[in-house]
Length: 332
Image (cartoon, rainbow, N blue to C red; front, side):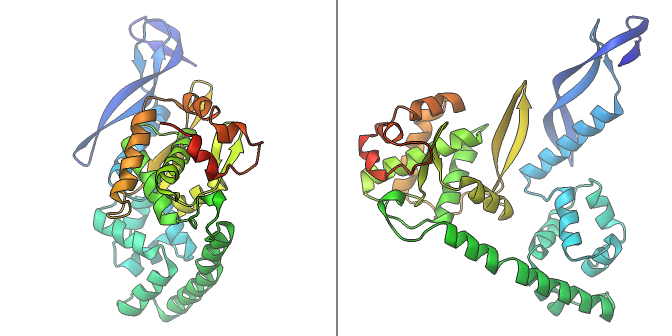
């Protein structure tokens, strides 16, 4: 792309550069990585509506992340799952006609509105809301909405929970460290590491969980999470971990954000809430802290290579579950 450069006094070739930019979002300074169009010769920066809009959206989304606010597309998904127009949804909530439209187009919602939207995301909560509040919708719309809620309750919830329970056994055995799978405990472990780390990548997280469970088992005779770990090319990996991450995303515990660093695709773990109070015991926190301190300066490749040297990994083949019996050979 060519542009006229005031400094060079002629049409010049342009280049993209990355730089830090700070935006004021709701009175808070938000620093983000920005793509900027610049002169390939002198470096003079040009106005680029596409890049500037993308950077502004990134700043708004960073603010939302910090304050645990729903993204515009998440608000739209909540509305659409009930088959409501923007105007009907605003009427249902007793908000101004344009409020939903503004939120879905990028305006930042206030915390009270965000809390109500989060509450109404669950069909059973929407049912309660309809039954306990004065609703401006006409009778035909109410009947249709109740029908939609009933279908959502039949399609989700119980069936998803049942499927998840069938995948992850509650029966203690050597493969899970003699502890039935504990989803809440695992979520607390993931949040612990995600909040301690400035940039926690998915590959490293899987190794941190493995070492935490194995060392806890070695010292206490039981695993922390009840996870099984499989031998995969990049080291030990929690069995069916992608299914677990999908549930964490759906439950707004943590999500994976993909970004690029040069030619490399990276999957960063982003926490969406704090570790619940009392979710981890003192001895569990002690083990997690020791694992974190041991590997805090390791990159994903380094910790993967390190895990390849463990006896349990070397004694198993690709796809096999690594027994917790091998934890006895682990050292920090």
